Image 1: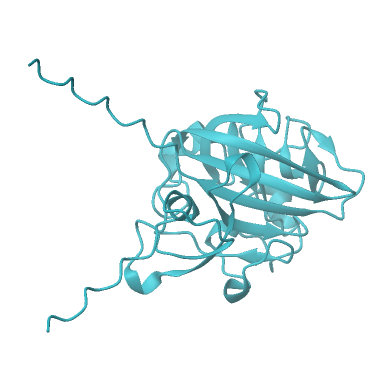
Image 2: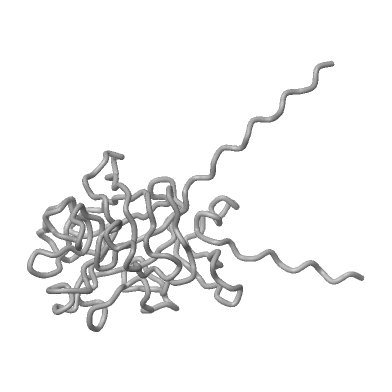
Length: 242
């Protein structure tokens, strides 16, 4: 008898798993730039804002979850035990290469509140490595500048933040050992007063939301990625005339 056909490859992401009918929060994925040997378990948020979100990073502190000052999206931390509530990081180099229309989400939980903000990419500056090259640094913000685009709050209202970037490479961001990332309207780093969401600078890295310092800093921030919605299928051709 013929050998059985090989099993299908894992889905590329939580969004792909969702489109295939999965509502599971734990999915084996093989991102499009990864080899089959680099398949790994990912956590998915399949409910917030329509679901399909792949967890990238979980932080409980924007200044202390890593040793030194790092780009958290190319670090590895607790990779075998991805978590929505405990510090988690995965090296996303050569996994996804976002394009215009793809989305990121920051979700925060703490102080009796859960909220989220999304960011739609216009330009991706992180290449395949998730590290900004020098020719793109002024287009997507600094320290790293991952993307430019537009943020939207959980009600869908447009926000002022136009950069998805960080605060960990230079000046106080680096000397304080920061690893903050978020969305803001300030071009050089995630500045707290610049409509910032995430780990933002105000003389130190702190949790901010919509440009406001959170009174309760005991928060969990989770960061996600979701591919752009698929375009609608083309209309069926008209039936031939009898």
